[in-house]
Length: 401
Image (cartoon, rainbow, N blue to C red; front, top):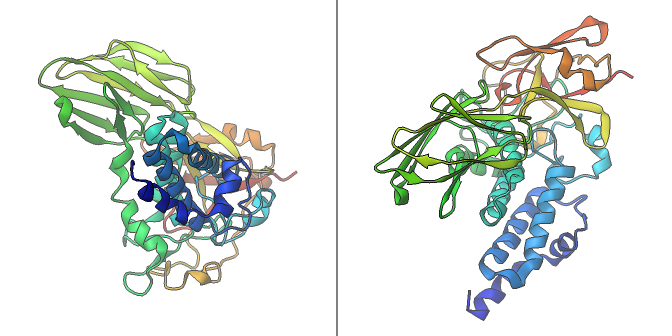
């Protein structure tokens, strides 16, 4: 940090055409190759991290870029872009028919940027996005049968997910895709000197060696809304336990040994459990009720995705034209030209705001739903987007009006 030559070197690699506008809170991303820009911005964030407050321009640039991509340029899964590029924000509806939306590498690198920003400013909204992109984009990117990974995750109605082959295709999203699935555990928890942050709700075990503390998280989230934290320690200790209250959850309730500790009614924040003196065997149960809602397509309110908590739901439309191995492809440039089928996606016959009210969970153990009230009296079965690996799907629904 004190060496002027070392501080000057990264500046020679900064692309001013990208840095200057976002540092001034100006969005000039239209037409730029998305996955070229995100690593540059990760670099801006890193420059600020190692150089200090006098280098605030780089921090401002990284924060504004994150905010504009997450809040104005992303689909319901947390992915973005079409044919690898950022597109004008008024073109979301026109891009839905593409088979080359939501490049997996872009989601991968947005999560890296999110972690970088969070490390110096632990805001809950960073992990509201992280959770959405991890469960919908990253978890959806791997074929659980073959282990192969996606390049694009197409929003095209009635299309399918395509994966690389074991030996004949190695895309950028193959390399980062291999990394993705080894990294699920790295962001579940965070800590500072006296507080433990619970960011994600995933079955896991944390060994905090410096504190002599082990935390075991047990949950079936998102299929179930109960999260249990069990602590093991050699001696009692005071700990600030801060649990993310997700923006999608109206009310979060915490109990300790079966007794209600308190209820949080501040979605999108961290809730600090009061009086958290930890003894060996201390157990906290956190209940995070998930509910159905619609999420409009940016700048196109005639389209909306159906969400259950942070989970994007996709309509199931069969497996016409698919056979074992047919979704493993060599040339990603041909995405959309293969495995086509005439799939009729019904329109929603009422205001889109009513879609959630006409959707019912059909399986208490797994996320399976049925929506009724489509044109012609049609109904549609839905499951999490990340589980639609070998069937045709639809993500966004269009109102018929």
